[in-house]
Image (cartoon, rainbow, N blue to C red; front, side):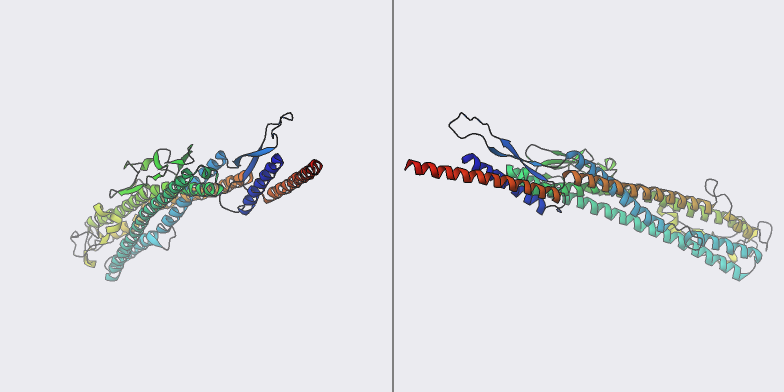
Length: 447
């Protein structure tokens, strides 16, 4: 009777586990639990109670390999998601259509130079060239401002992402403390789901390695090197800005920026420290090349008074960025040197200005070709990242699906278990009924 009663308790425990599985079937990162049983030693010759079953430790369906696969795919998706978003924003700052942005401003300037060549002594044509020069300078200023805004935004997003990483680290440390406080919490399916939800969220932000400890806690390292969580203690990351780059410092104050190359944080660091400065430098090179070419041609010509011009058309401060500081000087229409040297009143210089549209300027490329190369490189990279992001999302979905199939809850399977346990419980109940009748019969006989 004792063995039978214990069997009923074991089956009741199995039913409770199944019930919990079904209730949590849709809970994020919940891994199926199974209540295993142990066959007790059976000796039919013993006068003491023997045989029957007892409960074994709960078995979690969690699979470390599948979890790691999901984290890796989540890290890759986090990187490509952020890269795609950042490159799309950069693309908007480098328009490639002929009727907007820098390409339109340059074309309009060259067209005004051609009009000046047709009427080199016309005040209207001269004023038109100055107006187009102003518009060209503003287009460079606007592009530089957009890059400045994108750069500042990327820096802010780096800081915000680091705060998100630290918030998750604090959450994991709190879960570690809960699991360590009671040995039963180590097998608590709810705590386990919360822990792995936090770890998966962290994997989207930054690459990490987590190691399970005997006390139920996990140790988490960023990029396999910098400790982020050890036991109940979180070691938050910090940001540092040296007026050039954003850097990431670990809990010991050591620079770990170069080790963070994946996840959302890795993409943001790459965009903020490498991609945006690179395109800004190219924009400055383009602005400086344009200004120097125009100023150089005008300096070699003659103004309306038949003398060399007294000042340049464009000014800029290279130390602050040619694109951001490009401006038209206080030059007047009479100071524009439309004529070539030795040809007062002519249009040789105006023709040279108009021909700049196809003249080699930077590395053997014309200004339009150089700008087109910038836009083409960005477009090629954007297409590559877009394809990579699509692939990463599919691989992440596959990894999650495989994990769910292997470790998640199947309501159909759990329902089948309930039927099995129900039959077992009924069978044990019948045995208990027979034993009760035998006991009553024996007691009646003894009376």
